[in-house]
Picture: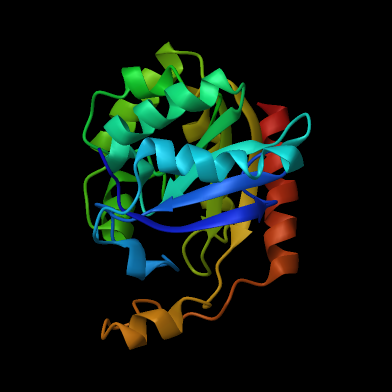
Length: 237
């Protein structure tokens, strides 16, 4: 068994607690307009077995200390469920913490995979089904299936919300996010990520029109203010 892995970051600091080894898988069903990794949309040649990947991850283990570990990211790791299950079985023998950075859109049958996952980093694309489809190109029903399984299995969750100017940078959307997150259990933290244009050159090099050519980067101070507003509204619920 092999999987298509785009790259491996051996000293990740923003993809879960502590110092992480981050595995970026190729392949994704979504075509998010603000995606900054379009080169990972399609699966490429399979290049790692679970044993080869674990061997590479174990080299990073001395840096993990008490709260670090491995994060499966992408692309979309849920498209490689069988591979991750076999890899996770080996990682658990080494007592390595496993996080899953996901949009929640894979091929179903999430229960077996999630039993090996210690933390889910769930990307919220939009709270409204119509706007969700407009941004991602697909229906919202698959992520709802994933959330249902995640809730049933009581998985710890970190929420990630990209804030795009003209779409999420308003009080109406913040209200909808507060309401939407009520149906997700065990949320330990919520992060707002300001939209940036760092992926633009990748689109151009791949011959793909950049979807948000008309949008400026999200002002970081305004993003911080929106986050404070979110916390205030969440606290008042």
